[in-house]
Length: 483
Ligand SMILES: Cc1cc2nc3c(=O)[nH]c(=O)nc-3n(C[C@H](O)[C@H](O)[C@H](O)COP(=O)(O)OP(=O)(O)OC[C@H]3O[C@@H](n4cnc5c(N)ncnc54)[C@H](O)[C@@H]3O)c2cc1C
Image 1 (cartoon, rainbow, N blue to C red):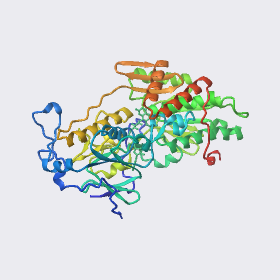
Image 2 (tube, helix red, strand yellow):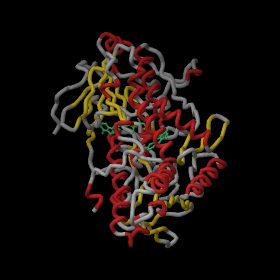
Image 3 (cartoon, protein in one colour):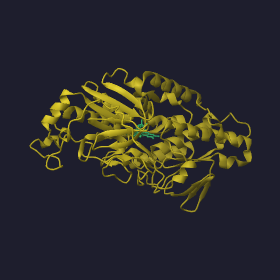
Image 4 (tube, rainbow, N blue to C red):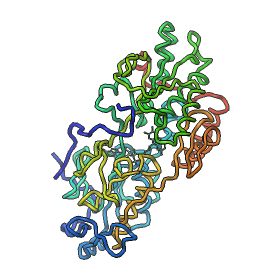
């Protein structure tokens, strides 16, 4: 059955303890699809075969006549989303004889872990984004990169509908459209407290933050409220934002205004749970809290948000924090594409996948990255990259007649930065904080950035910011924000 977008029906969820008329233009691989027997099928009426080769985990049986057909024709793979997961799936398929079509609603891959740097004027948007076409320029089997939004999926007829009404057909489909913010049912808060997920979000936040200093300069009598910044949610993004906001106020802007003292700005980090960075070992959570406080951030844990409006935040305790800017870093839910996949969903609306990352009863459809719900696997970039590589290998193995394998996540550790020379790291059995953790964070983020130019520019920008205490990207592009 074909599904199209309607009002977003996703449930609340996420990782936040804060509690809180189709035109049939076939753009597809042009491959005529054999009958349904062409599909890989799971044995024993839909359950996975448990055979002698249990070391390999779940196995698939191949319908050989159908697959012979596929091997003779070119196998078309459609990949929706060129984030960390989709990108790694396509790269893994680079030496295979398949025709790949990539669809993304943006023409660039975005390095989300550094978005907060754009939001806080440390980096420019082009430093952390890279054109998808350029990434795959040298990969011959990437036949098309389409700038389009996916608005419909029909897993039975194997068709993907784009926002211009055209459709793509596929033999294998990889869905990797990631996640978005969750306001836990309070969607009206979004207007007052933007979240950070896209370049547009980052530029919006940058504009709001810088504009508050300008407004305070014009109306110094209201500076206390205007220069109070509340960040809701003390996960890695909230912690990064809070630390960077203090740096802007105390260092970057300190001597640039006449009527106000930017360093008197107040940054409040509000968290519904008991600790900051709840996913980290206790010792690192505590270290993160003391590093934030040493920087000048007011940390409020066990503080549930009851309401957010244009001039501040109400806490469940009855306290009101008057603020010029409120930022949302509290909740995550699946991208709306998940609602188009007929499969069980978890509380955050993510697709509950089979152990091999396929959709139940559709072994030719793999859901990966932040869109997939896999027990014990966090929504972080390394997990998305590993799932991308696994999805690519699943397609290669099945085309070669080899059995499918379950996905196994290798946790390589986690790092969160708090500010200049401040961070926490949990790598293997090592737990460390402060300057060494920050150096590790810096090196890893530069290493994983795509494009030599980006790596060089980010390195130069950071070195410059570090030595001069300046933030060069202090541009307000939306002048409505200055009121
Ligand atoms: C601010 C922030 C900071 C983060 N920091 C870290 C960190 O420090 N370390 C870490 O490991 N992880 C971090 N993460 C998490 C990490 O970025 C994600 O886990 C990772 O990006 C997930 O990869 P993905 O490929 O599943 O989704 P994404 O990277 O989100 O990619 C999804 C892609 O799908 C496209 N898309 C979405 N909907 C459609 C549609 N309908 N049609 C077509 N295309 C569509 C999008 O344009 C996008 O290119 C951070 C995330 C954010 C938002």
